[in-house]
Image (cartoon, rainbow, N blue to C red; front, side, top):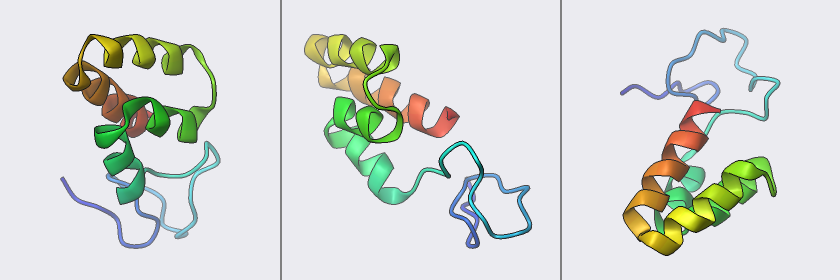
Length: 77
């Protein structure tokens, strides 16, 4: 997996060096937060949405499902 140096995204097609209009690419802090504290990572990116509450339930069931879901949500956004 390659990280773009200009804007920090994982597969850059943006040649201007600016972040996209959806709120920007995931950076290392977002990924680490998603792994260590999954609901906080999603809350930081999206706020209190359905994905956040689904992640809370997954994290209660176990840290691994919550972390996997958070990383997928953050990278997929």
